[in-house]
Length: 276
Image 1 (spheres, rainbow, N blue to C red):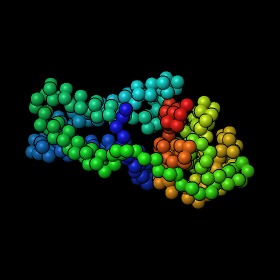
Image 2: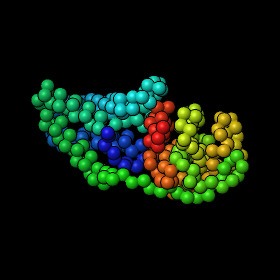
Image 3: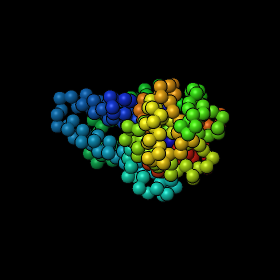
Image 4: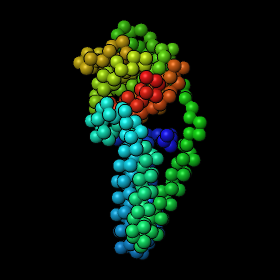
């Protein structure tokens, strides 16, 4: 089991930073500032601490990725190339923290002169992590209800609000989004392996003709492509970037959420959340 922090995405213009990424960068910055404060006036001492903290950041990234892959080994064994797709959101906070802690302990044991700066850095990052955790830790994870707006099916123009149809994976996307263009074909290929889960491709803010042309070109099932020309559904769901994937359970509540490009393995892990 992994620690669960509900960290929102951060949009910087066209750049979308997943919650785990900007949190890791913020913790690293806090560690550097704390180490610099502890070593104030000792330029050489801080330079050595800074190198160790950069190595800790690298170790944390490797540990977070490795722990997640091992935790979901079955999905990655079926799609081994997904191991190299570092944009798919497959990271373990517990694994990353364990790797960072192990490296800092090793460096502190081998280089006693580094201990003051590294201890200060670890305390600075820990205080920030505790603050973020206090604000966002899900003691009892809830499943908020999904928005309810009348949507139009691309195939026949019939209204559809995504409720009452059993488990649904809602994909918020747009034709101009490069990450969507890479993720949607993987979702289409995964659909037959999960017949009990509907995948709804909910387009955001585009005209019917534009969506129809894209669906025809990329063989998207028109019956599962929905139109939201005013992006009302996505705005109500709090989406700030595409693709945003929301897993709705049989009661129409959000069971899981993912943002950004997803690999084949990450898609399999998400779909497994709602059952085989």
